[in-house]
Amino acid sequence: MPAIGPESCDLFENAMIDNHQTTLVTGVAGFIGFHIARSLLDKGDRVIGIDNLNPYYDISLKKARLEQIISHHNLTFYHKDINDLGALKKIFSQHHIDKVCNLAAQAGVRYSIQNPFTYQESNIRGFLNLLEMARQFPIKNFVFASSSSVYGNNKKLPFAVEDSVDTPISLYGVTKRTNELMAYAYSHLFKIPLTGLRYFTVYGPWGRPDMALFLFTRSILDGRPIDIYNFGKMKRDFTYIDDIADGTISALNTPFSYEIFNLGNSKTEELMELIKIIQEELGVEAKKNFLPLQPGDVPETYANIEKTKKMLGFNPKTSLRTGIRKFLAWYKDYYKIG
Ligand SMILES: NC(=O)c1ccc[n+]([C@@H]2O[C@H](COP(=O)([O-])OP(=O)(O)OC[C@H]3O[C@@H](n4cnc5c(N)ncnc54)[C@H](O)[C@@H]3O)[C@@H](O)[C@H]2O)c1
Image: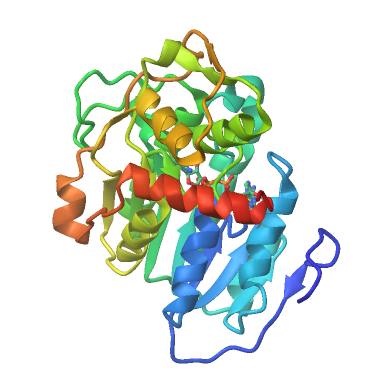
């Protein structure tokens, strides 16, 4: 297994076979990017992965995800930033890339209030760089991560792609909506097939340490209180990672001139239900710290997925309890909790 460090993992060139599609997955060391890359590799496709391994959260988790796939002969990994246009040009010149799956971004609603410029860099500039690459190099499809955050304070439930998204309430949501608008213009001007996927609260094994399920699990196991915002009056459409990977790969295989889809479970769950299931599965009662709603946060998300079902054959299958069980099994194994 090659060591994966910022210095040593500049480039992993592995042997490749020629009769499969090649997908560029940006953010490949991230939660969703890792799962999608692994599914594509399992299907026999080639993956060019890019990630800047930034320290937004524990880099060792990003490296551990990479270690799961790095030795695959169909993966080529570049430790690069999507803001580096020169590096992108080199990668697009060296490889025949059929599809782009852009997942690299600065994620997180709350962090965007304290650190706005990192959102502009990765989410706007980095995205523009990739659009420019798709303009210069012929590709068959370009799929990118948008977010349920574009709906902001939309009061109409469930959220449908036809709903107005002119009132996002976080800079993160603004950058994701901006991506959708940039994609529309590029698809119109340069005939690049572009599809945006509005992900709804994705969770599962290898998940993100800044998200509720991970934070709650860690605090409960450490005996520390969990922070429960809006005094528990929150609802989220939690969507299991395998369902997200299936929907994303279906989008990669189905080029449209321009489309936006919701990828959610289409079942909105009370935050207190999530906590109840974690407590039951761990057999530990959480110490609870009830707090007001955080700026930028919305009280409820709920995806209307009729269009996604019809046009992408999307069919999320994983219940919240099953998904939490799988997450907890991974968490205990990864952190060696007896
Ligand atoms: N997880 C969710 O619930 C959720 C919901 C809605 C949208 N999304 C979107 O899905 C995508 C993936 O999210 P995730 O949960 O896997 O997040 P993540 O933070 O785990 O993954 C993002 C990866 O991108 C990399 N990255 C960030 N900026 C980069 C840059 N400039 N150049 C190269 N690499 C860079 C990071 O190092 C990280 O490994 C993001 O675009 C996110 O905004 C996620």
